[in-house]
Length: 199
View (cartoon, helix red, strand yellow):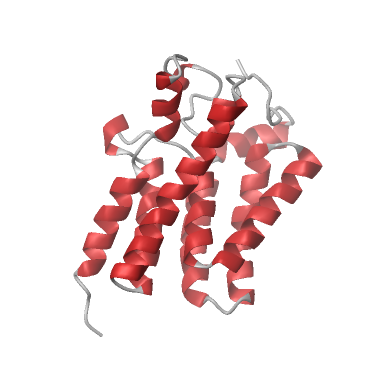
């Protein structure tokens, strides 16, 4: 089995797409300053929602998920399915560790969901449904992300996509690591609910 050098191109392209900090860009353009100075300090949609601007939070959610999806679809179409999966994983890493922000980015939930929707849409839909169902029950974004991340490899296997399950397992491990502080607050009962203006 030979290594395809185009996978390196997919990794680089995916990382570039993923590293665009849309939450930071959008809030600055809206005159809200640096999103990293409020709430959790995160650049993702949940923290953007704490500004009170639901429209900006929605835009951040769509763009953060779309950048991973775009990378996955582009490299799947231009190169191969494995290249698309590599690009999706790299986009996730780019979002979490963007070189432009000294490798301090978001937690990757929207990017995770976008990557899965593009790589295998039935798996992605199940991941989104898991997030939504948990959010409706508990109204805690981080808990919803953790439950969705934990179950997504199972959904991928159920649909016969071992390759996607491997990707989902890798991304889920990173999501749990990035949410270590949230896990601690969940266990203590101090994790804020969706829409709360954390100070």
